[in-house]
Image 1 (cartoon, rainbow, N blue to C red):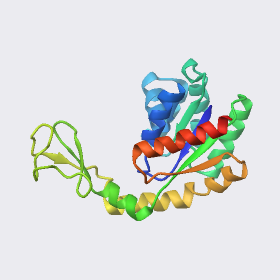
Image 2 (image 1 turned 90 degrees about the vertical axis):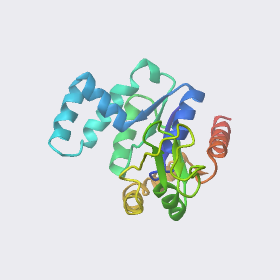
Image 3 (image 1 turned 180 degrees about the vertical axis):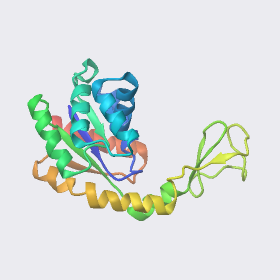
Image 4 (image 1 turned 90 degrees about the horizontal axis):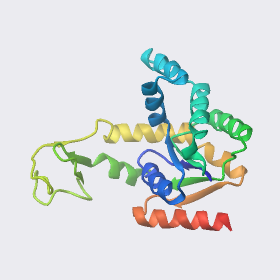
Length: 218
């Protein structure tokens, strides 16, 4: 089965993709992880990507498609794959379709996690974690039991990701709606788009995705 997870930053694509990876025994493919692995391994594509990134430029669609093609040819992707973070544009989607057709591995489904932008901003912008043990918290939804003290290890030091501010999250959402949201009608026209409420609890989202998969396989 060949799947794509779509949805804005913070919608939970990565979490659901990891759960599906275990359930379906397929490989989860994150473009960032693939790039880092290729660079570290020193493959030909990795060297090209490394040179581009060191020059401060974006890796081209051609390099990304070749990287994905090389990766899904591996034995651990024999049962299929889940793409998380790619494609992000219509041009990438079209190039991906051509490549997968040449490998006789067409997309099975595209699962969109739908979200409410304002609630998503609130969900992401309030996140912080313990600097010592990494335990995760949220200003509103999961504060520490005792103010300023980690529930797990008792540390008083906490960190926040630089890109977890309201301004940054809103900017990322705007970029998603402008560049990636047009993929929805693209895949809808192909009859392979399914939408799931990404604002539900993680377990509920997983159940809905499983229902989609079951109904598709019948």
